[in-house]
Image (cartoon, rainbow, N blue to C red; front, side, top):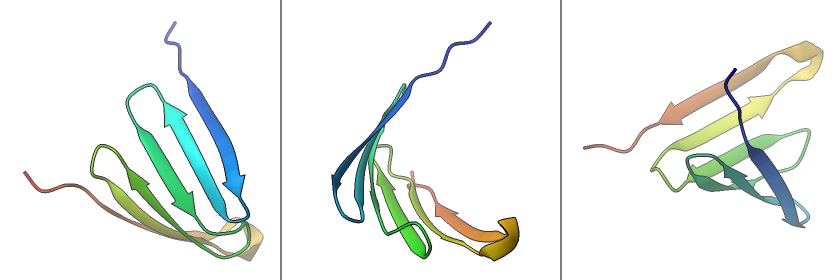
Length: 64
C-alpha cells in the first residue's frame, strides 16, 4: 500500500506554500479565479477553475 504526503500552508491571502514527498511549491491565486504554481522541480502550472466542475490547466515542465 503506497503512502503519500502533502501539506499546504496559507502564507497570506492568495498565496499558498505546498510541501509533498518530492518537492515544494508556491501557488498564487484565489479560489474562484486563475492560479499559477511554481514547483522546485521546475514545473510551472497555470490553471483556472470554472463553474460546474469544469476547468483549464496548462503545465510546462523544465527543459533538460
